[in-house]
Length: 277
Length: 116
Image (cartoon, rainbow over all chains, first blue to last red; front, side, top):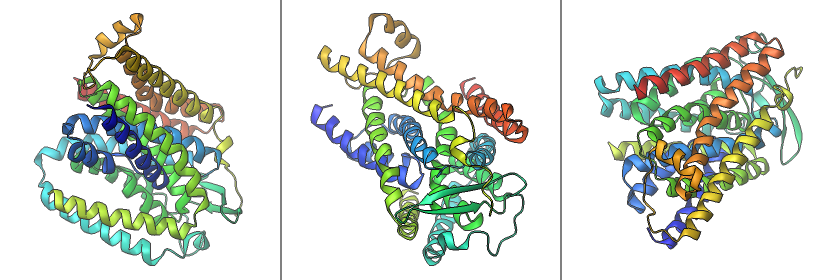
C-alpha cells in the first residue's frame, strides 16, 4: 500500500471519527464500505479494523461526554448488559434466519424511526418529564443534568420507561449478531423517543455502549488473525483524533440540528442495507 | 426535577481510566508507527499472530509494538467495566455493581465461547 493511500485513509478516518462520535454510532457503517470498496481491503480485515476503531472512538468520545455530563453511566449499563446477551443469541440464530426479509423489515423500521425523529425534532428538551410514566427512572436514579450549549442552559432530565433499555439493548445485540449493524442506530432513537433522554445525552451514552459491545467482536477478529497491525493503528489513531473533535462540535450545535442529522443518517443506512441485500 | 446523580462524579476514577487506557494505547501505537516508518519496511499488509507479536516486543519490532497497543485498546472496555463494578460497589449501589458484573461476565463468556 502506497504512503499516499495510507495518508488518504488517515484523513477519511478522521472525518469518520468526527461524524460517528457526534452521533454515538460505530465506525462500521462508514469504514467497512470505504475500506472494502474504495481501498480494496478484504472484508474480514475491514471489519476487524472498524471494530477496533469503534473502541478508539468510544474511548475518546466518552472522555469528553463524561466530563460534560452528556454520558449517563447507569443508563449505559442497562443497555450494555442486555446487548451482550443479545449478541450471543443473535450470533447463534443468525444461521437459521431469513436475513433478507429481516433486513427489509429492519430498514423499513429505520426509515419510520427517522421520520418520527424528524417530526418531533423541535420537542427535544422541552418534553422532559411530560406525558410519560416514570417506570423506574426515579427508583433506579436515572436522573441527570447537562449543560445545553450553545445557550449553556442547564437541562435536568430523567430517563422514563426503563424497561425499554434492556429491551432495546437486547434487540441491538441481536441485530449486531444477525445483521452486522451496530447498536447506536437502535439505542439513540429508543433513548430519545421512548425514554425522553435528550439527544445529546443519548448519543454520549451510546458512545460508551458501543465500546463495551464491540470489544467482544474485536477481540475475536484479533485472535483469529484478521488484524493488519499497521493499517489498524493508522485507522485507530485517525478515528481517535476525530472522536476528540466530534463531541466538541456536537456541544455547539442545537439539539434540533443534531436530531435532523441523525434522522438523515438513519435513512442513508436503511437504503444502504436494502441495496446490499 | 431534582438531579440526584451527576454522572461525572458518579464512579470515582472512571474518567481517569478512560483517559489512561486511551493515552497508553494510542501512544504505543504511535510509537509503533514511527518505528515502522524508521525501519523502511515495505510489508504494510502484514498480519502478526499474537504470540509472535508478544515475543517480538523484546526486540521492539514495530508490528509487535503496534499489536501491543491494539491489545491495550481491546482490553480497555473490560477495565472500564471492572472499575464501574468496584466504583458502584464502594458506593453501595449494588444494583449497578451487579449490572457491571453481568456485562463483564457476558463479555468474557462471549469471547470464551467464540474462541473455543
